[in-house]
Length: 289
Length: 160
Image (cartoon, rainbow over all chains, first blue to last red; front, top):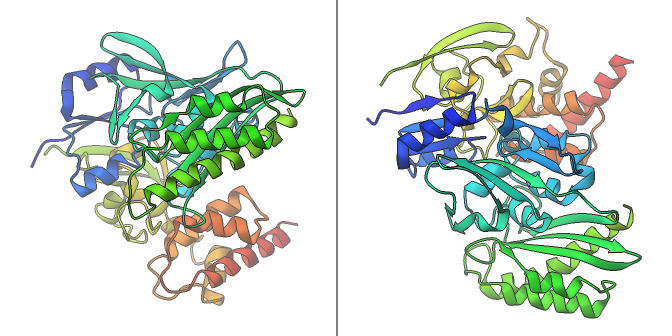
């Protein structure tokens, strides 16, 4: 039997030291809703488990001086849902995070874990890509920031360097007239993995879309930032012609696989349809802001 | 393998136990702690039969390491009744036969109690969404959902 050690450091420096020293045998434990399943199935056999939930910065939700938010990587979906203002300003990000699993899973699962698990179908990721969230990671060589879309490297893989720990997400301040939304297609009504997931964040001024970002999940080896779709929306009044261009851009960005959840043709079609529906929800919300 | 000593609180009582670093909370509950009310259905967080409250938050005990309980408070089905007096949800489940084989029942009760703690007047849709992480292969869910709604109504009446 392999020796397993469990560590729950109080500081990031300690956690990084332990994580880096243990090398590839170490696993970070945030909510554990993926890690424990992987350990149970034998897919992962960690020598060291580094629990990061005792580190204040990794479990905090703060409003930044410029009016944005910094959300610790290990904040659970249930805790984020109870924050008095996060969900009003980023309803799309919150609804995406709150789609991860059951209420029981929500009590533990975090956006940081969802991102680091590296699934192309992780629900929180397209919404955070659309939001323009910035990831802060810290490792033995210091701290660095990068856009969320630069973290996934492929199914089950990330661009985090050895010994690096995902610390937090920073969400930018929101101009007036901004909102976001996330929709996913699943064959059931609850508790399933996305066949396609679309996150849209946009800003409207006098009915004109002045800024937009589109994140697309489950249709490629990584979640995609679809700039041509956003560009089709920017400058428009979200009229049919602009929506059709954005829809076509989403479908064109798809590089999906055929699997039991959906075929290539189906996913490609649904990506465009969901884009239009998600834009409509984000625009309605933005109109009220 | 070196066992880890954990000091925690379970159902308002101090508790301690020894566990392996990779044991789940469910392993500790059903093993050294002898609290076998929480059930293992899937062991992968899908069925909810092992639902407990961790610092009053609903979680699957199969998706939590037992070492993580250190310094926290776990509530299990064993702490639901007060002595011989059943919790209103337990009473209602019995009266309306909101169970058949019983494997899902402790998880259903823990999850339902967590819902009513948060929302004393849930709609049927809210109950169904909240219990989406608790699988029952006997009842077809309808009796369970009705039992939760009726209990909520009675508890609201009793609170007035």
